[in-house]
Every structure is written in structure tokens, then in C-alpha cells.
Image (cartoon, rainbow, N blue to C red):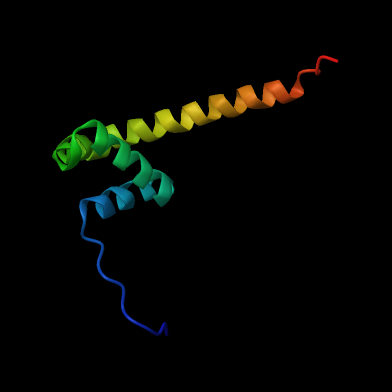
Length: 87
């Protein structure tokens, strides 16, 4: 049996967003980063309704865009490494 203090329940909007995206396989750190970016874009805490709308559709789309951009960037970097170097 685990010892120590029991964990606090996860009751914040951020926790709910992390929990919803974790079910889809997104890591907590990435979700938190994207949520913070979206909140900054939407003007702070007033942006939560846009993020939560339609079961976090905006958040999911932002996570997928970020993943696609990272994949494209990695592909370009890999291609650059494979090119013969000018001597």
C-alpha cells in the first residue's frame, strides 16, 4: 500500500484538459504547453470556453498542428543531414 499523503483531486480546468487529451495519447507536458499558448492567444482565462468548446476540439487541433509541424521540421533536418556536404 502506498504511503504518504493522498494526492489532491485534479479539479482545475487545466487538469480536465490534460485528462481529456491523455485519453488520446498526448503527454501532459505537451498539453499544458499548448493550453498555455492558446490561453495567451485568446487573452488569458477568458479563452477557456474556446478551448473547452466541443470536447476540446480547438485544443486537439492545436496539438495535431504542433505534432505535424514537429514532424515536418524533423524531416527537413533529416534530409539536410543526408545531403552530401560541399567540400
